[in-house]
Image (cartoon, rainbow, N blue to C red; front, side, top):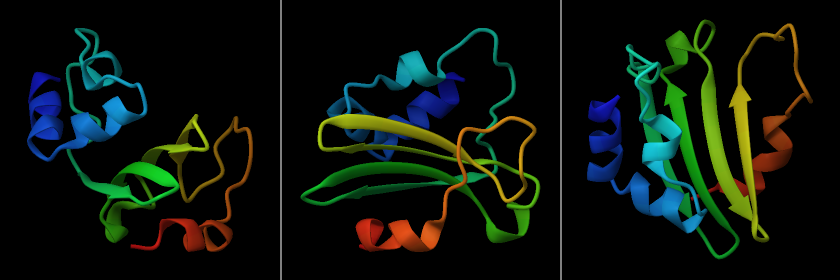
Length: 106
């Protein structure tokens, strides 16, 4: 996954993760992972006065079969979500995007 960590550093995501006290090497560099699970994802980095957000999002036509993932910090608390359009076998909560959109607008 060295290519992924190099790519994330090239777009500045390493700095966003560092501001959340997270390391791209600890998150994504593993000998156990041979295939990049984010190869079909686009990365979005957002920041405002309240949030630092990193999203790994597949194209719209792939979202029915691929997860998307987000990390963000809000009020000094780091959050991590794995999101899907299907109801997984095990989950903690159902996320409704409409309620959250006011926080992530550019």
